[in-house]
Image (cartoon, rainbow, N blue to C red; front, side):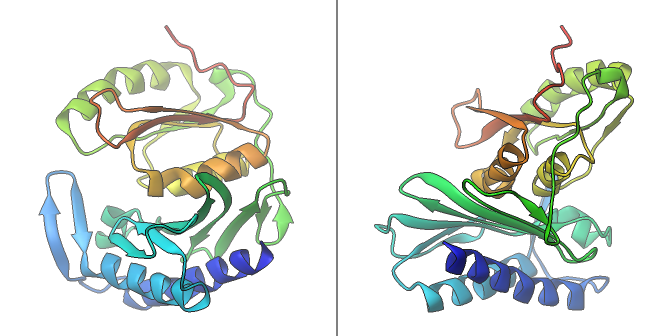
Length: 249
């Protein structure tokens, strides 16, 4: 398993150089959407990660935001988000990351999240202590919502925004602070290292949360996921330190 982890870190660090070198420049845009942007750099970052992983493990599969590669029948499937926080990146906001997870026979067994701008690397393997830049990390111990800082994510469709606004209104009155950070993977990494006490979003993709969910759970937290109500391939998630009561009804 350690060789898989080393490869994931190597691939993420290679992609981080690409993203840092281009940060602050005007990036090429493949598509503008109502609440999202798809960059040419998303594609290049995933191609770079894919090339490194499949060079080492040619029989594995890659499942990412920018498409599928490798052997689709493989029990080993790498789940890649080449830029989580693309809108932040486009607008020059230095809050984005690279997320890579490995799923074996349907179960996520390792994950890494790398913040290129802060040079922060979270890494975790199933059954092992999660690390932030080589040191163990753990969720917070706060139990009161009034003491806590939460991140509430808003997805890209009008229906999910409409569903998220009432939740945000409830939380913003009860928590110490609510944040909208713009990167699901970093939100989960922040929960795992005690910076945030919880992260809630009603509609995310697997590549947004695969590494982060394992990280939070290994750090002593709790993740609850469910299929999105509209029956799409999106996922609803509530991640927390495991002792915070998020029920506000």
